[in-house]
Length: 205
Image (cartoon, rainbow, N blue to C red; front, side, top):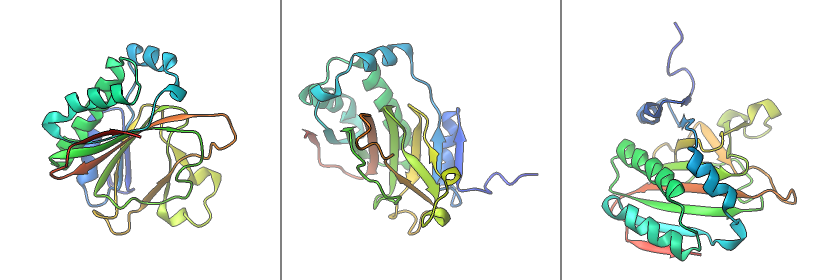
């Protein structure tokens, strides 16, 4: 019988897969969720050039209201489906981690951003891509000379939990932004970190 924990990455269309990140052998858990029709319609109408990067730190109980305020400040039109999708992801991260709050970013990217495979200096990070190519990841053993088949990409709208270096000193999964400089492509990326006792800071920049 195949060992369920044979590899450090887990992937499913069932959100329960996110709880697998709690297992010591797992460093990446991917929930391949779908986008509702309303969200697809909102994203088709969104002009990334008209919105600013959004940064927000909030306790769990204040997140919904603060996210709405921060999206307005950043220039987003009313996008209830996107807001609900983001809050759903944050809720799963909070439930799995047991954290009291989150640090959240919604970023517009048109360059190579974090182009090297790496692990972040956080405890637990959630990633989802709403527009453009998804975040790429590899097994750490392949980091020095990865072959094309070693490089995996998250599906659009998938929500992934990755252990950072504050949880696992040397995580077995590394990730990067896909190289899109000079391609004309753009990305809308959601980043959520689990934090304790966050200082509330609704900011767009």
